[in-house]
Length: 172
Image (cartoon, rainbow, N blue to C red; front, side, top):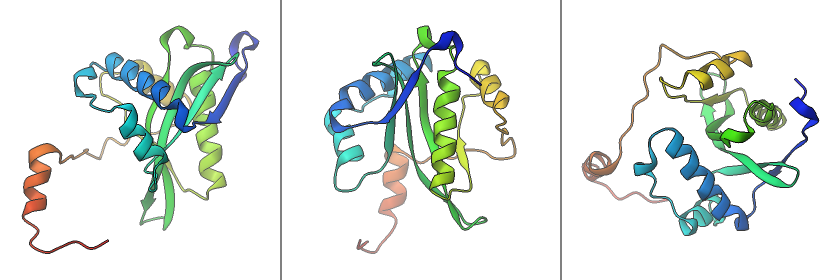
């Protein structure tokens, strides 16, 4: 799908100096999702987790006319059934005033191409149940909702409690 209004989108890998911008986009996304109160990320933590010795995720920045308009943050996961890696899209965000121009589709298209280049068997992500515009958009590009799966999460004291029940030292 060509971009609307002949608007060009440049997608580039983030650099460490982009961490304040990435944090701003994370906060904007969290505000939209009514989850801003959960954001504890800060620039030093992003710098360490995205650009430190162990890089836990990757980020690409979407720019229109050299102005950042959004980002995607993703990392590799693995499918035992396929015996291949996949890409997991943690966040995709386009600023509200820039939506409807095809930028979100371009970001997903970029990630799909990257997944194939890296021999990934899947590109996966979650979407909030109430976010119908996002659900409609994802289905329009061929994504299939995985209604048979329930997301589970351990965090905070529940994570600490379960970890404390492991009675051996972990060596890495």
